[in-house]
Image (tube, rainbow, N blue to C red; front, side, top):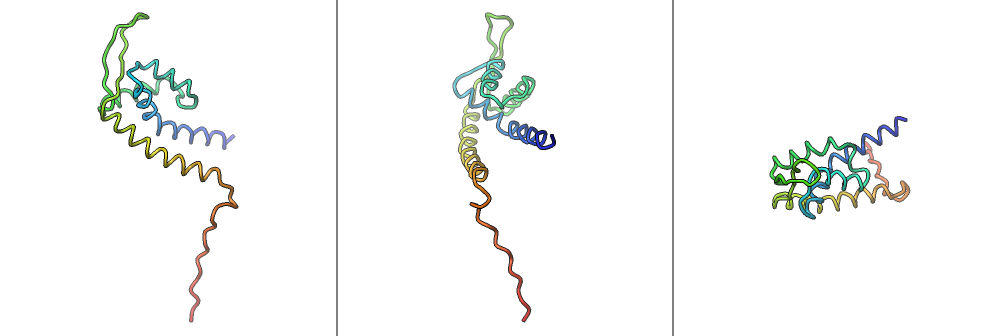
Length: 130
């Protein structure tokens, strides 16, 4: 049970680290409102644990100048706040994408290797007294 809860905690940390850029990637395709962003993240699986995490994230992205917002009427009820990627958001996403590819490849390489395939660390040799 401990291993399972530890793995869930680690997954939660990974999720927090990449969720911002996943939202920016969704907005790269065009503007969207929060519920639609949640739907896309939920369909991807493993990226969103609750809808409540997305609203503070969107507010932070707006404060940081990575997205802008506008209000629009909705046929289904009250107005919706739409989010749009800014040039700064696009730059941030591009930079993250390059770093993520290298990071993912390194992690995949380590996880895929068998211990016998890894180079063994050399033991330090002690200097022998003369």
